[in-house]
Length: 227
Image 1 (cartoon, rainbow, N blue to C red):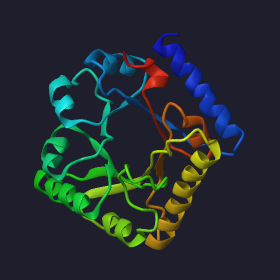
Image 2: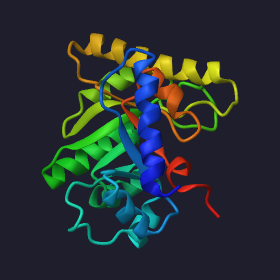
Image 3: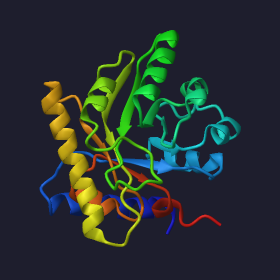
Image 4: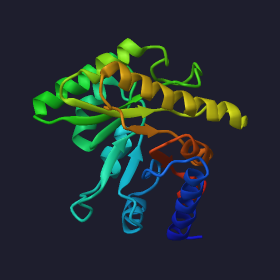
């Protein structure tokens, strides 16, 4: 199948998953273009995918070309962001989907202030509690609320990566926990500030959509396995 055919199938899968679990909100597809050449980004845009995800600053520096013919494109940084790479990241990307500490949130906030802009971000939460993964522990509520209160960043929601397992119920539970945490944080904050749930990748996006995901990050499902 070509990209448009795969995308048609994916969108049908998303609609079916939502219908069977009582959701009807829009779900954004972020094309994970890491390690893929720039022409993949162009093909995604032609197929009406208007968000891409990259996880390495140096790769983006070398790969990104002018985006003047793609005015709607949103470039999302989805990898672990080292504090010494924040300046370059904000030069290249429109949003940071992997804020995993108060320190990083403040660094982004300070840089955004110097640039005279507000940067949309997502807070990464380690719902699987796997030690090799970054992110806030789900019980770090005060720390996450502190990030929401930072100036010059706009915390739009939460992000998680499902556990590395074939156990679908464990994967599902990690998504349920993120949804419930988002609801709890909104209650503590006093308004419905967190609207986005970025959860689900190529292998588990249907489970994530069944549990309320608003953003799925797809690479293999769109492009096939890397050579």
